[in-house]
Image (tube, rainbow, N blue to C red; front, top):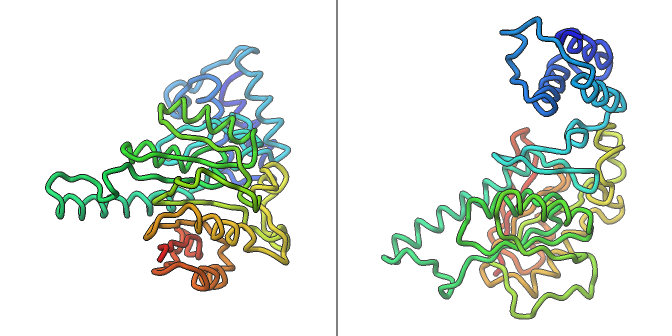
Length: 302
């Protein structure tokens, strides 16, 4: 069958579910992934024909797309910043808003480096001559920890998750990108959670579950029906559950003047900020995402 005919079938079968541009993106991503064909192939070879074996994975992907399964789960890969990561239904698909959270951390770290370099001729970190220690709580695919490890090569990265399935994916991603991350199988909601008493972090970052059950009607089917519920949703009566648990954890494991970076529910910015104001934090800052929603919070431990 002609490749352009398969493209037409994608549009015919998916036209009631997705806009034209998104269907184009699905089709070209599939031919790149399964056939290693560049996106411009039809422009230069409009008559290209596929064998039955070459057609099969495209039609299998099409059948799954018709169920609204996310393409990232179908292909088993997702992009985050400049990284290609393995994903499956044990982990959330990395999102652009989380890339912004990572960039915030990297920008602050770069500014700190500049201050240290100016004030200390050797350029060494002013942290008792030890490496910067960073913890990612609820790491999922490992996207945050791995992205930070790639850029902050002198930092010690740790990543925690309650799901062993998620940690398996995160470990594979860390190995693929040749970064050293210490993965911890722990539940941040466990009041008995204990790490080594001497283990303090200079930065703790988290994208915890924060979508309330009452907001489910706003969530697209491809997210609601396929991405892990435990990584997305919280009970309406206690939407800040994970943030309180993180606060409790920081009392034992966040360094004095350490920084906390969090992704938050866009509707609960004021409430989340007030929670941190009521505890041992200062310089609390809300930041909007690229869509103009309150999405990130930074706080310093007093």
